[in-house]
Length: 262
Image 1 (tube, rainbow, N blue to C red):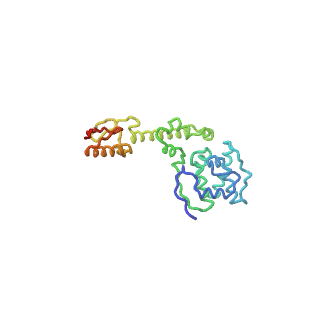
Image 2: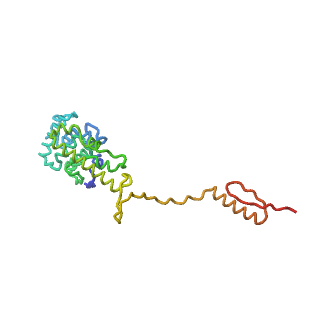
Image 3: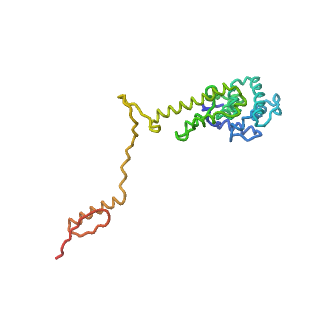
């Protein structure tokens, strides 16, 4: 089978994986909101039951979306992953899928697809499976990006405090989000000093405000009115030279001479 291209963890499911999901005829519709559809683990269990129905009890899994039900489903799936040597699915990726982190469910579905169909797959996972909306924020203009408080709210789920009550672990996650946000702001100030009214240092060592780059606008084309006036002016001059009286109307200023008839 053809290899899938290398994809970013924020990219949607490839077309080949979507066709595979639709061909399985699962009990729930898939593809519209992958992070919500696969967060409780029931669809993953249903996919595994289709490939190994004799060794799999789908009735043991629930379709509830409560946090405790999700944890129960995924704990059973972790045992199944270990029995089938599916070590390519890390525990942190499962935790990110439970909390609907952006891009986590897409990565997990593609890894399951790669294992079950024996397809070579390349996908980029973030460091330590820390799924954030940094890639989405980078695509936005500077004025539309999230503030520090919104960055914490967008990347920290309230249910994470319930599933992982360790305050030190939560503090490390929060500090990492703040550090990434400050690094992004610092880079913006360097690349776009005009927006932040920041002084820059030139080659001579002097500091000054950055001068905005003004591009020269192209000369406007000659309008029909100006072209018509130019032609009238040329015709008037020619008529004056031969002694014909003319009358001009419009913005063109022309002096005519009157010729007395004998």
